[in-house]
Image (tube, rainbow, N blue to C red):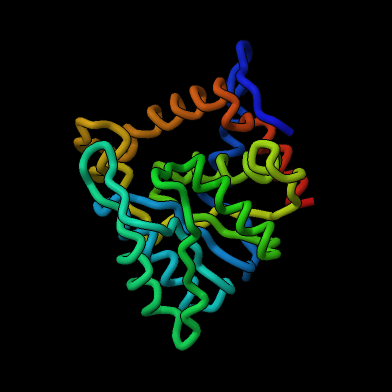
Length: 230
């Protein structure tokens, strides 16, 4: 199923659908275990809670592997640097003697959430991963989950057949105050703003990406959730 640009309609057509999605993303009915967890890449000032969730899942043996965005260091538009090597070193402390439980998925030279979701599901399909937890920094969690569902439902934009992988949302740990400052990595000016004020930015971004054909709708995510939990 190839993605295509949308010239009419909206990413989310009702407040009820959005409320359902938000409720699930921040309080999902996760099973006790999953084949793997994926940690979406975050810049240094936002990474602590994401890595903490990954370490917690490894230590508790609730996942077979913790995956993350591998490759070389990547500089954000605001100049901050995402370091896969640093993430690997942190996570290995929780993996015990089984270092293979921590793996950085190879990526393109420049990566963002959409590319990460595609590479994740390509990897999951190749490696027989059928159940998956995903984690991102709090204001990014909704879009990270939706992008993952996009990759599953569209077969990574038509590269694969539609996949039947089940994904659940695992928010970062511990929860931060919604009024705590978070760094904005997607702009050259960077800067910080309270996390709660970034939600409108995320919704606008999802609308824009959907119009490009790079996202499934909020309602399609709700349909996926009905299938997943059915």
